[in-house]
Length: 448
Ligand SMILES: Cc1ncc(COP(=O)(O)O)c(C=O)c1O
Image (cartoon, rainbow, N blue to C red; front, top):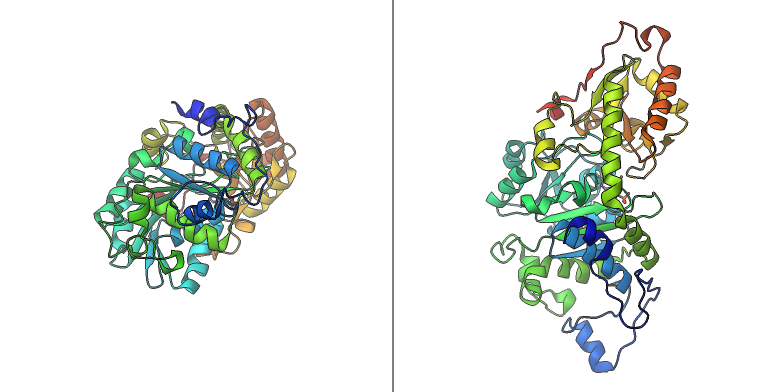
């Protein structure tokens, strides 16, 4: 089945209770047992079924199956937000004294989780100098438990060479975990290039309407946990928190999600509500169509900004001069994502004036809504970082990040035009010889 069709049908058949075409919202905290023996079999994980919605829920189960199929994965676990997905996905492979090696271009809160929270739990995250396989490889040591990247970085717009990063990770016997929020499986399926675990903020393009928080962890089922038992005892040795279950023995190639659900979801309880699972399923039905329009509108916006003398630089992987152009061809088949950043003449002051002048495009920190959105990362999503950390993450003081929606392109361009008029001194107007727009003066780390 193709991704477009999976997004509409996979994982659900009416159960005979009522032949609904829509996936029902199972708004139930618990599920009745047939008997004490039935309950025991469920708790022993000997039988499949539902017992309590903190562990699993029939509506959420359809979403898990559907997104796993779209990503080409083995199994998935839904959680309450994208952030919880990053947290559980990495926690599942680490222990105090171990480390993760990450690219530096990350969503701000993921960076905060890695740089500030994980060390308090005894897990170090080593940030590579850039997103190249060489820089990642240089940091992997005996205590490394995963390599982490965003397939397309937010807001840097860098495209990771997933295949090369997977090869480096596998050479060292560790999995590659990829945040695939920005491209979605419609534009890129990291598992096809060797990624072991894919995580998403479903809040963004997948849900697509800016209404619903959600996250998901998808396992490829391919990483050989048993072969690397020394690094990953949590999958290979009896777990006293689950009556000495050995996850690789019990779940086979589904050990990763089996443990994540049984240990982290069960005890930390970052639950996606069934209603939210339903809303996300509705959004996903149209994700393929929306992505087409997002991508096309973003290309038109990038070209408009590049050709405008009021704009100093544009960072868009669809331009041949972008250092990520060749990776956009390989991984996105030329369909550069609809997140792009730019800076206008006049630096931070003009950037702020531009931001305040927007009328149609909404000033929010979210991305991936069907509406066009604008964000000023230095004062919002990446505010907690130092200037040097921001620079590494691809954020400069004047950077404006756009998430281009699916409105009519003329209305998007008209709003940008009037906001630029308000923001930029009159001598740098359209048609003037001043101000030559250029490709982004991307931070050095991005240019590598
Ligand atoms: C790339 C990326 N990953 C993860 C997250 C976190 O997702 P959520 O807001 O659903 O917790 C975000 C949020 O903006 C994001 O952009």
